[in-house]
Image (tube, rainbow, N blue to C red):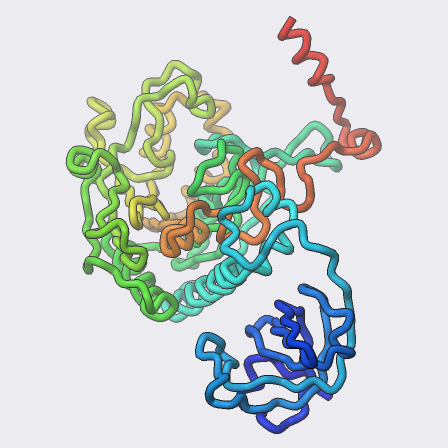
Length: 474
């Protein structure tokens, strides 16, 4: 007999069915026992005799063979999708016993210590809120793919093992076994690859990209890795990029978030100076009622300064003698009318940068890129790049000598969009296996030591970090 999903029982009254799933709850009523059986489509009530249900407990995995019966009208459960039916069990097969769970899964989970939730994430995901979040995440990425393909975009995967270059955050580096002493870097973003894809003539590229940055954790970004929609277009203006994203997200909200409403359309476009002056932030929360969880206030922040003053924290830029650091990144194009200021007053140059803001969170950023090698070289000089640092981008500068179109793009964060749209307190609530705030990978207890044999193959010798730390303290 083929398996029947719980949601399909409502159309099988009078039929014999085989259900497979987990015991969600058990209720004993003397001569009969009720269980709610759970599978990926929901719950259905099953009626068993005490002898059939003798060994059943919550979260056991079972197969139930039984007949679908219509519930009497007064016993219909309107809160359940299958509330008009129940299954009268004729046979029960216990497939797998469940030990007592180390955490409850019948609540939202937000009241439980996060370390416990992450340690047992495979159980935490069983709760309705987490299951629904992950299901919605899948629907969002599917919608985005379908929408962009219809708009003429090509999905291209770019390398995960790449080159370390000073792009604004600390790299995660990976040692090479075949080229001892050399290292790969995990990509902070596909920035350079997507710009070279524009040189390649693809004109419209996207991918759902994994990005890796060794940054301190914060609520709107998980430590270590995150996911973004990465896209780039040739022969495009900033207005065209903003209109594409606005149209896509408006349609996405209407289809996948029917209970939500976008408060203003078209979305406000606020110059950076005005945002800071009027709201005190470059990511203002423009909701009319911040207590309304169904209100979504999108806006754009534009006309950012191309540069900020370089600080001691900007270790990845220049020689330490330069005054300027990129406000966004070093590939952002200046406003055409401000190019002359690069020679006279760089701090007054505005960049063609655009940040996407939702309910007070920056959920994406992008820009029109520099496509002229001479301007790119001038930006490198202003941020203090040495000749050896410029050589780290030699592959890109060489590509730009073979006919590069004007281009630009944006990278909305999938995690951050879902967090803001759903009103979740952290991006970790929309990620299956996130890292903790201390950098531990959920379930796997990573990072962990490498074996002596692994280190030997890589030609790596570890300093005694604990000893050196103790020496410094003394």
